[in-house]
Length: 579
Image 1 (tube, helix red, strand yellow):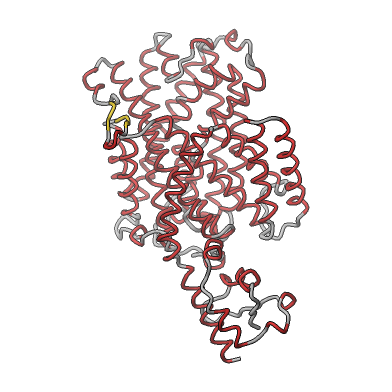
Image 2 (cartoon, rainbow, N blue to C red):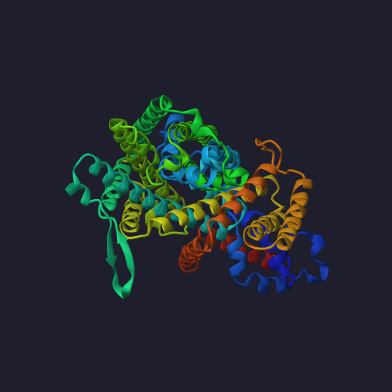
C-alpha cells in the first residue's frame, strides 16, 4: 500500500534505500498508517515532496549493493604486504620522538607499561576494524572507515569519516616528512657536512596577509619522490615498502641487542617515579605511535582474500608493534639515566653519549627510513579512499580513474602528493601532530559505533547517547569538578546497560564479550581526544567544516544514491496512479 500520512517521511523514508529501482516493492507498516490516510490521490502530492536535507544526510549504502569481489584495481597483496604496510604506517615519529618525552616527563622506566597500556587500547579498536573487515561484503571493498560508516550510519557520517581519513593521511604524512627532514639534517651534521645540512634547515616564511609559517625546503622533495613510487603500481610500491620495513626492523634489532649490553639495573630504580598517574599519562603520549593501522583496510580491493588477510593483518600489526615498542623502551631506560634521556632523538643520543658513533648513525638512518616508509604509506592509502568516495559520487569522478597499465588511481595519487607537499613545506609541526591524532581518534570512534550498529542496527539511539555521554564524562574528568563527572558517568553507564541488554541481530560476532570491546574503545578514544586540548579540537573542527562544505555543494547533489531514490519515487508514483 502507499502511505500518505503528513509525516510520511518519518514513517516510510527509512525503507527507501532498500527498494530496488528496477521494480522492487515498497511495504510500509500498516499499523502506523490508518486506513483513512490511504488515498491514491493524496499519495501523488506526498510522493512529489522533494527529498529533504536531513533525509539525504541519513541515507545509507545498502550492504547488498556492494561490489563483492569485483574491482578495477589489481588484487596482488598478501599477508606480508599488509603487515609491512601496517608497520610502515605506524612506525615513525611516534616511536623516535614520543618515547623520550613519555619516559622523561611522565612515566620514567615504567614507560614500558605505558606502551603496553597504549597497545592494549589500540588493540581494542583494531579488533573492531578486524571484525568489520571480515564481513563478506564490507570486507571486500576499499574505503576503510568511510565505507563502514556509509553502510551503518548514513551518508553524512560516511563523508565525514572519509574526510577525516583525508586529513589523517595528508596532515600525518606531512608531519612525518617534516620529521624525516629533522633527522636528515642531524645526520648530516654528525657526518661533518654542515653546508649540505643547511639545505634541510627550517626557515621562517611570511605569507600574504601577514601569515607567518615555517618553511621546510626538503620535506616536499621527499613527498614528490614517494608520490612517483606510489604511482608506479601497487605491487611495486608494496615491494619497496616491504624492503624498507625489513630494514627498519633490522635497525631496531641492532638497537635492542646492541643496547642490551649497556643496560644497568640501577637505571630501573625507582621504576614508577611518577606513580600510576604518570604511567597513564605516558600511555596517552605514546598512543600516537600506534596510530595509522587503519590504513590497512583501505587496501581491501587490492588484497587477495581480503576477508581473511585484512583482519589478520590489522591484529598482527598491533601485536608486533607492542612487542617491538616494549623491547625498545626497556633497553632505552636501562641504558640511560632518566635525567639524561634526550627529548628529540633519544635512541641515537643514547649510543652517541656512550661513544658508539656508528650505532648512533645507524639508528638515525633507521629513523629516517621509518619516516620515509610512513609517508609512503599515507600517499598509497589516501587515493584508495578518494577512489571509493568518487565511485559513490561524493567527490569528482576523476578520482576514480584507474591507470590501465599500473592499475592505480593515478590522479588521486598525484593530488595527494601535491597537497601533502604543500602542507609539508609550510606548516607548524606540533599543530600537524595534534590534528593527525584527533582525526585518527575520531575515525576510530566512528568504526566502533559502526561495529555496534552491525551487531544491532536498531541501537543507534543508545549508542549515540553513550558516545556523547562518555565524551562529556571524560571532558568533565579532565577539565571540571566531580559533580559533572558524576552526571557524565551516570549517563554513560545507563547507555551501556541499554546496549548490553539488546540482543545481537547480526550473525557474525568474532569479537568476544559482546559489545564491551567497542564500548571500552570509544571511552578510551574519547579520553585521548580530550587530552589533546581545545586547540586541536578547533583545528580539526575547521578541517571538518571545510569538508562538509564540499559535501553540501557537491557530494549531496552527485551522490549515487540520488538515482535510486528518484527511481523509487517514480515507481511508487506510477503504482499509486494505477491504483
